[in-house]
Image 1 (cartoon, helix red, strand yellow):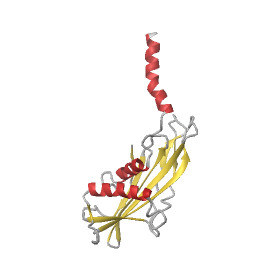
Image 2 (cartoon, one colour):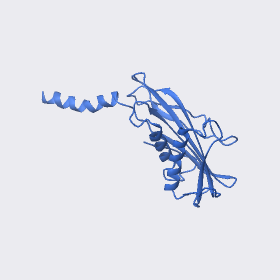
Image 3 (tube, rainbow, N blue to C red):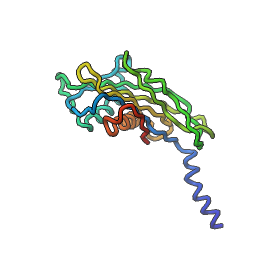
Image 4 (cartoon, rainbow, N blue to C red):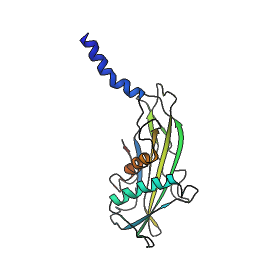
Amino acid sequence: MRRAILLALSLAPLAACTTGPQRFPVQATRFHYDAVAERGTIAVEPLPGPSSASLEYKTYAAAVEAELLRNGFTSAAPGSKPDFIATVGFTRAERGLPPKRSPIQIGIGGGGYSGGWRGGSGLGGGVSFPVGGDSGGRLGLVTELAVRIRHGADAIWEGQAQSLTDTSAPDADAASVAGRLAGALFKNFPGDSGRTVEVK
């Protein structure tokens, strides 16, 4: 009897994992042309497009600006010319969540940043998640955040972060997703150029 109780207790966390919201890591890729040792004033601007003035864009821009300030940049005074400009873009796409409880990994994405800077070098990468089992028909959101930092006419750093979010999770709101992506993108800034890292 005692063994049966202990077995039931040991399986309880596993059962909770299979019914609760799924969590997926953020994958971030950065490219830069030097150590980006210089810091200065910086302004955050949107990519050209219809979403540039949206409230959701402002949420992502605020998350990026917070990370830039944390890494030694300072906000440019209104009306002044900043030393650096950070261009921010994001995309979201609804996608069914993958089934649970399988060690097999597949990738999504990998075709570059679809809403990226015109004429720039789109970044590759992808979000890996498990396959096999039962997903329960729940929906997720694949979100990509792309940032390019310019010094004058020259781009000195660019990066992309992307992840899949379970919409049933308590932290699936835009502010939480933006903060998670920006935090992963600027972790150990400027990062290893050309390397994709996974941040849980």
